Length: 395
Ligand code: ADP
Ligand code: MG
Picture 1 (cartoon, rainbow, N blue to C red):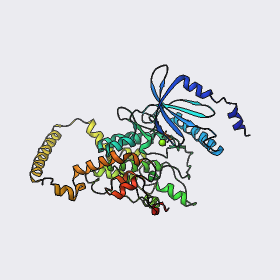
Picture 2: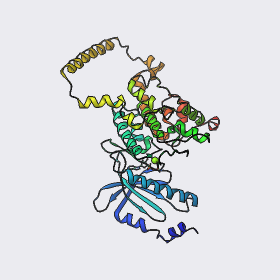
Picture 3: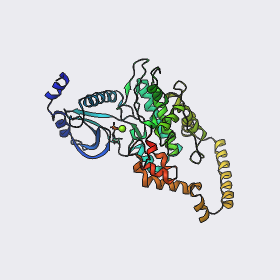
Picture 4: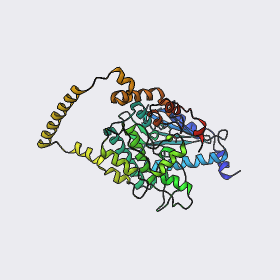
């Protein structure tokens, strides 16, 4: 028996667990991870609500290697969380307890849950809302990177929202503290969010490895997804999806990108840059005009001349709307039958209904994807539900 195992055996099963249960009253499950369950809990003394991530480390469920791996990665996650928890856009680790079978991590409770679920409810977000979320996320990433920490699993499932829709970054299970000039080689993360250099490095032994830039690529995938409702890289055959990522092949397709600003598209193109050296850093991204223009709107009072210009534009817009409204063809039943998806209002309704009906399938596995729900074909919907044919399983 190793010294580690002996030490664990000496630890009473209930030591940390008892302490946790004395202090907190665990309630319903609010989330699940690969080897963890997250529950709402109440601090007995103050009645305040928190979230507790309960990580099971029992030999019945995991092999000795897996047990060691889970303990090690949880210790690393806790170390990083202690380092970064004081940032306003990063989840705070409040308390932690450990017994021989369970680890309890107590966090701030984020009542609105994942950004992923919020997006599923809304289908797509406005540029204003996207700007607000992305600014907080990039500030969190900038803070991590200045502390030489790379997150490696940025995605809407790991971005949590509170009552006021403020976001906090969570799940530091894949995070890593980088030594000066250190490069990583490990293939980890979530397929749709993996940067090209992570994939290339896993296929080529001579590749120099990857660094913090991978988080900015994932930010690019997130902005795209928030604005379009579907991710930039998706193919039902995973091998082809990975090829698209490595080539940086994505499109601002019609109709979902028709009404989006060129600054938003420019930001995305600079984040989804295949070459990590040319990709925007978190600091550069925060200085991009996508964020600057909005700040100017808020900070400077509107001058007289600007007020006049706004009034003139508003009058002109009213005239245009009136003319278009007069010219507009009525929506007939024939038009609706022929191309319902071509009518903007109906298109939004179809997307919203598809998400309401099929949204919960999207999250079941890696091979099911929001993108399929936007393809507006029965086959695509079946795929989103996981009805793959034999060919799809080829890698
Ligand atoms: P894993 O590392 O296993 O993916 P996470 O830390 O991402 O675990 O937690 C799993 C899920 O639990 C999250 O995606 C989220 O839905 C929920 N969750 C985690 N932390 C909180 C929190 N502080 N408040 C509310 N929900 C949370
Ligand atoms: Mg997670």
